[in-house]
Structure formats: C-alpha cells, structure tokens
Image (cartoon, rainbow, N blue to C red):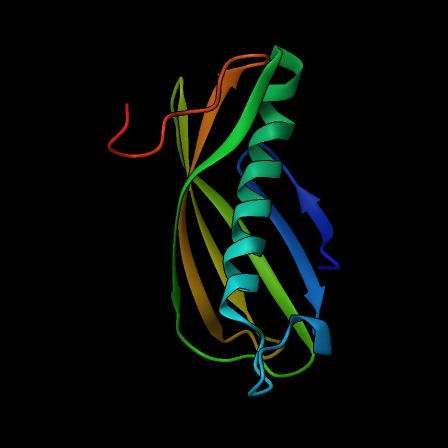
Length: 127
C-alpha cells in the first residue's frame, strides 16, 4: 500500500499514502477498501505502540468507514485520534483527507487489546 508513518503518540498517529494506479479502482478513484485499510492500519499500529511493552496485542475488531469525497491523485493523508482507552478495547476516529485538506473518508475503528498468546476475539454474534 505504501503507508508512511509521519508521527505518532499514544493518542494519535499521522501517515500518508502516495496515490498510484495500484490502489485505484477502474474509474480512477482511490478504492474505498484502501481508505478502510489505512484507517485500520493506523489504529492498530498506534494501539500496538502503546501496549506492546505490556506484553499485549492490538487486533482490529470493528471498522466503519464512510466515503465522502474521492481522491484521484496526489497523496492520501490520514490522522488517527484515540477517543477511548479501555482495558480490552480502544476506540479511534480516523480522518482521511486529500492534498487540499478536504475530508474524504471518516472511520470509527475499534481495536481489541489482548494479552499476547490469547485467542482472537470472537466474531460478532458468536461470543
């Protein structure tokens, strides 16, 4: 995908992805799945950076991405902000913007925090 982390802390992470043909859908727009993947990557990485030293893992649990405006060229900019830090789940909002700073996608991402070596969380409705 070409994700480049620009900066991070326990509460936020900034990254960008250069637009290339490989991440576009047939109409020439960055594929919506790329936005969702970027958001999940940022939230997972930021959580991991904060909990790894405690022997914990960060695993994506829910991803709800709304697509607001297409990006066709330039760079996809992403900013993840932590909204909740619980014992077993963290909640993140991720904004995807274009080179002009316009909001193009918005994601609400839930990350499960588990001890290393524990089984993954059960899918919704199965646990």
